[in-house]
Image (cartoon, rainbow, N blue to C red; front, side, top):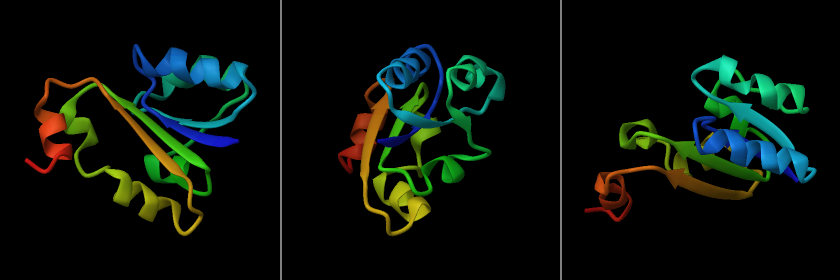
Length: 106
């Protein structure tokens, strides 16, 4: 399974490494490219942008630390970035409740 993993912080980095260890093909992205060094060494490819990471993959996983980091990057935007390939989106935000309210449309 080809997976895009966006956000390699305290939670995202080990989650992405575990996916690589489980045999998944990963395309990773983080604002800080240095955070992807261990993922690249383990076989992941690094994308130049979230859009590039999401193009043509079966699953997009985001693990973003700040509520503002996820604004404007919801499932519809990621699907549009990927094009008509289908697939699944999984969001993992570490938020203070404000992001949950945004996702609920409140």
